[in-house]
Image (cartoon, rainbow, N blue to C red):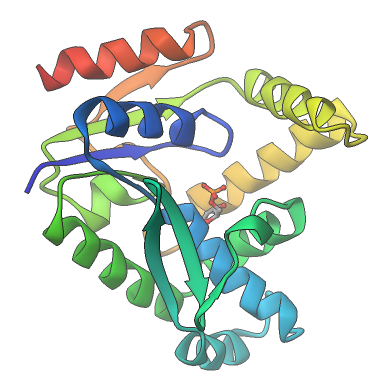
Length: 217
Ligand code: DC
Protein backbone atom coordinates (compact mmCIF):
# COMPACT_ATOMS: atom_id res chain seq x y z
CA UNK A 1 0.00 0.00 0.00
CA UNK A 2 1.27 3.50 -0.80
CA UNK A 3 2.18 5.51 2.27
CA UNK A 4 3.61 8.96 2.87
CA UNK A 5 4.79 9.74 6.41
CA UNK A 6 5.11 13.34 7.58
CA UNK A 7 6.59 13.96 11.02
CA UNK A 8 7.69 17.11 12.76
CA UNK A 9 7.14 19.42 15.72
CA UNK A 10 3.91 21.25 16.58
CA UNK A 11 3.10 24.12 14.25
CA UNK A 12 5.41 23.14 11.38
CA UNK A 13 2.43 23.00 9.00
CA UNK A 14 2.17 19.21 8.81
CA UNK A 15 -1.61 18.97 8.63
CA UNK A 16 -2.04 21.73 6.03
CA UNK A 17 0.65 20.18 3.83
CA UNK A 18 -0.46 16.59 4.39
CA UNK A 19 -4.07 17.45 3.50
CA UNK A 20 -2.99 19.13 0.26
CA UNK A 21 -0.72 16.26 -0.78
CA UNK A 22 -3.44 13.71 0.06
CA UNK A 23 -5.96 15.65 -2.04
CA UNK A 24 -3.57 15.88 -5.01
CA UNK A 25 -2.99 12.14 -4.93
CA UNK A 26 -6.52 11.09 -3.89
CA UNK A 27 -5.03 9.43 -0.80
CA UNK A 28 -6.65 9.46 2.65
CA UNK A 29 -5.21 11.97 5.13
CA UNK A 30 -4.70 10.50 8.61
CA UNK A 31 -4.12 12.99 11.43
CA UNK A 32 -2.65 10.89 14.26
CA UNK A 33 -2.34 13.87 16.63
CA UNK A 34 -6.16 14.01 16.68
CA UNK A 35 -6.23 10.44 18.06
CA UNK A 36 -3.88 11.38 20.93
CA UNK A 37 -6.02 14.48 21.47
CA UNK A 38 -9.21 12.37 21.69
CA UNK A 39 -7.54 10.22 24.34
CA UNK A 40 -6.50 13.42 26.16
CA UNK A 41 -10.07 14.73 26.02
CA UNK A 42 -11.27 11.50 27.61
CA UNK A 43 -8.70 11.95 30.42
CA UNK A 44 -9.69 15.60 30.98
CA UNK A 45 -13.37 14.68 31.11
CA UNK A 46 -12.58 12.01 33.71
CA UNK A 47 -10.39 14.37 35.71
CA UNK A 48 -7.28 12.26 35.27
CA UNK A 49 -4.01 14.16 35.78
CA UNK A 50 -1.00 13.70 33.47
CA UNK A 51 1.09 12.18 36.28
CA UNK A 52 -1.55 9.53 37.18
CA UNK A 53 -0.03 6.74 35.10
CA UNK A 54 -2.24 3.93 36.34
CA UNK A 55 -5.41 5.91 35.78
CA UNK A 56 -4.23 6.80 32.27
CA UNK A 57 -3.66 3.12 31.51
CA UNK A 58 -7.11 2.16 32.82
CA UNK A 59 -8.68 5.00 30.90
CA UNK A 60 -6.97 3.92 27.71
CA UNK A 61 -8.82 0.59 27.98
CA UNK A 62 -12.18 2.35 28.29
CA UNK A 63 -11.69 5.00 25.62
CA UNK A 64 -12.67 3.52 22.30
CA UNK A 65 -11.23 5.71 19.57
CA UNK A 66 -12.16 5.22 15.95
CA UNK A 67 -11.94 7.16 12.72
CA UNK A 68 -14.56 7.90 10.08
CA UNK A 69 -14.52 10.10 6.99
CA UNK A 70 -17.16 12.69 6.12
CA UNK A 71 -16.75 14.44 2.76
CA UNK A 72 -13.12 13.38 2.82
CA UNK A 73 -12.51 14.97 6.25
CA UNK A 74 -11.28 12.83 9.13
CA UNK A 75 -13.71 12.55 12.04
CA UNK A 76 -12.62 11.18 15.41
CA UNK A 77 -15.12 9.18 17.43
CA UNK A 78 -14.65 8.73 21.17
CA UNK A 79 -16.89 5.94 22.46
CA UNK A 80 -19.16 6.63 19.51
CA UNK A 81 -19.35 10.43 19.98
CA UNK A 82 -17.92 12.64 17.25
CA UNK A 83 -15.45 14.81 19.21
CA UNK A 84 -13.56 16.28 16.22
CA UNK A 85 -14.58 19.88 16.93
CA UNK A 86 -13.43 19.66 20.57
CA UNK A 87 -9.86 18.59 19.95
CA UNK A 88 -7.94 21.66 18.81
CA UNK A 89 -7.71 23.58 22.09
CA UNK A 90 -4.49 24.37 23.99
CA UNK A 91 -5.76 22.43 27.00
CA UNK A 92 -6.33 19.27 24.99
CA UNK A 93 -3.03 19.70 23.09
CA UNK A 94 -1.03 20.10 26.28
CA UNK A 95 -2.64 17.05 27.85
CA UNK A 96 -2.07 15.05 24.64
CA UNK A 97 1.62 15.94 24.66
CA UNK A 98 1.90 14.51 28.19
CA UNK A 99 -0.44 11.50 27.99
CA UNK A 100 1.01 10.39 24.63
CA UNK A 101 4.19 9.43 26.51
CA UNK A 102 2.29 6.50 28.05
CA UNK A 103 3.20 3.16 26.36
CA UNK A 104 -0.33 1.71 26.63
CA UNK A 105 -1.84 4.76 24.97
CA UNK A 106 0.73 4.53 22.18
CA UNK A 107 0.33 0.78 21.58
CA UNK A 108 -3.42 1.16 21.22
CA UNK A 109 -3.28 4.11 18.83
CA UNK A 110 -0.37 2.81 16.73
CA UNK A 111 -2.41 -0.34 16.09
CA UNK A 112 -5.32 1.77 14.81
CA UNK A 113 -2.95 3.83 12.63
CA UNK A 114 -1.34 0.77 11.04
CA UNK A 115 -4.75 -0.75 10.36
CA UNK A 116 -5.86 2.41 8.53
CA UNK A 117 -2.70 2.43 6.42
CA UNK A 118 -3.08 -1.24 5.50
CA UNK A 119 -6.48 -0.63 3.92
CA UNK A 120 -5.84 2.34 1.63
CA UNK A 121 -3.11 4.69 0.41
CA UNK A 122 -2.49 7.32 3.11
CA UNK A 123 -0.66 10.49 3.92
CA UNK A 124 -0.20 10.19 7.68
CA UNK A 125 1.21 12.91 9.92
CA UNK A 126 2.43 12.80 13.51
CA UNK A 127 5.64 12.45 15.50
CA UNK A 128 6.67 8.80 15.04
CA UNK A 129 5.14 7.81 11.71
CA UNK A 130 8.42 7.40 9.80
CA UNK A 131 10.29 5.92 12.76
CA UNK A 132 7.70 3.57 14.32
CA UNK A 133 4.25 3.44 12.80
CA UNK A 134 5.15 3.03 9.13
CA UNK A 135 8.89 2.34 9.00
CA UNK A 136 8.50 1.14 5.39
CA UNK A 137 6.64 4.23 4.18
CA UNK A 138 7.36 5.01 0.50
CA UNK A 139 8.16 8.63 1.28
CA UNK A 140 9.20 10.10 4.63
CA UNK A 141 9.30 13.81 5.33
CA UNK A 142 10.53 15.55 8.46
CA UNK A 143 8.86 18.94 8.30
CA UNK A 144 10.10 21.61 10.66
CA UNK A 145 10.39 25.39 11.06
CA UNK A 146 12.06 27.64 13.61
CA UNK A 147 10.33 28.01 16.98
CA UNK A 148 9.75 31.69 16.28
CA UNK A 149 8.16 31.05 12.87
CA UNK A 150 5.87 28.39 14.32
CA UNK A 151 4.84 30.67 17.20
CA UNK A 152 4.11 33.53 14.77
CA UNK A 153 1.92 31.27 12.60
CA UNK A 154 -0.05 30.13 15.66
CA UNK A 155 -0.36 33.73 16.87
CA UNK A 156 -1.80 34.85 13.53
CA UNK A 157 -4.19 31.89 13.45
CA UNK A 158 -5.53 32.69 16.95
CA UNK A 159 -5.78 36.40 16.12
CA UNK A 160 -7.81 35.63 13.01
CA UNK A 161 -10.18 33.59 15.17
CA UNK A 162 -10.52 36.62 17.45
CA UNK A 163 -8.88 34.88 20.42
CA UNK A 164 -6.63 36.98 22.63
CA UNK A 165 -3.09 35.63 22.85
CA UNK A 166 0.47 36.56 23.65
CA UNK A 167 3.31 35.75 21.25
CA UNK A 168 5.86 35.10 23.97
CA UNK A 169 3.56 32.68 25.82
CA UNK A 170 2.85 30.82 22.59
CA UNK A 171 6.59 30.57 21.86
CA UNK A 172 7.24 29.23 25.35
CA UNK A 173 4.40 26.68 25.00
CA UNK A 174 5.80 25.48 21.68
CA UNK A 175 9.30 25.10 23.14
CA UNK A 176 7.89 23.11 26.07
CA UNK A 177 5.84 20.88 23.76
CA UNK A 178 8.93 20.24 21.57
CA UNK A 179 10.93 19.32 24.64
CA UNK A 180 8.26 16.87 25.88
CA UNK A 181 7.75 15.28 22.46
CA UNK A 182 11.49 14.97 21.69
CA UNK A 183 12.72 13.69 25.05
CA UNK A 184 10.07 11.14 26.04
CA UNK A 185 11.32 7.57 26.40
CA UNK A 186 9.02 5.87 23.90
CA UNK A 187 8.93 6.89 20.24
CA UNK A 188 10.23 10.42 20.74
CA UNK A 189 9.92 12.86 17.87
CA UNK A 190 12.99 12.53 15.69
CA UNK A 191 13.85 12.48 12.03
CA UNK A 192 13.95 8.95 10.60
CA UNK A 193 17.34 8.31 9.01
CA UNK A 194 15.76 7.97 5.59
CA UNK A 195 13.41 10.96 5.94
CA UNK A 196 13.90 14.10 3.85
CA UNK A 197 14.29 17.20 6.00
CA UNK A 198 12.17 20.17 4.92
CA UNK A 199 12.50 23.44 6.84
CA UNK A 200 9.42 25.49 6.02
CA UNK A 201 10.58 28.67 7.84
CA UNK A 202 11.20 30.44 4.53
CA UNK A 203 8.95 28.37 2.29
CA UNK A 204 5.34 28.91 1.29
CA UNK A 205 2.77 26.12 1.59
CA UNK A 206 2.76 25.79 -2.22
CA UNK A 207 6.54 25.40 -2.27
CA UNK A 208 6.50 22.63 0.34
CA UNK A 209 3.63 20.83 -1.41
CA UNK A 210 5.33 20.96 -4.80
CA UNK A 211 8.58 19.71 -3.32
CA UNK A 212 6.76 16.65 -1.93
CA UNK A 213 4.80 16.14 -5.16
CA UNK A 214 8.15 16.20 -6.99
CA UNK A 215 9.40 13.43 -4.71
CA UNK A 216 6.28 11.37 -5.39
CA UNK A 217 6.86 11.63 -9.13
O1 DC B 1 0.04 17.12 16.16
P1 DC B 1 -0.78 17.48 17.39
O2 DC B 1 -0.42 18.81 17.99
O3 DC B 1 -2.25 17.37 17.14
O4 DC B 1 -0.40 16.34 18.48
C1 DC B 1 -0.79 16.46 19.82
C2 DC B 1 0.17 15.67 20.70
O5 DC B 1 0.04 14.26 20.43
C3 DC B 1 1.65 15.96 20.46
O6 DC B 1 2.12 16.97 21.33
C4 DC B 1 2.35 14.67 20.71
C5 DC B 1 1.30 13.62 20.48
N1 DC B 1 1.50 12.85 19.26
C6 DC B 1 2.33 11.76 19.35
O7 DC B 1 2.91 11.50 20.40
N2 DC B 1 2.49 10.95 18.28
C7 DC B 1 1.88 11.21 17.11
N3 DC B 1 2.05 10.39 16.08
C8 DC B 1 1.05 12.36 17.00
C9 DC B 1 0.89 13.17 18.10
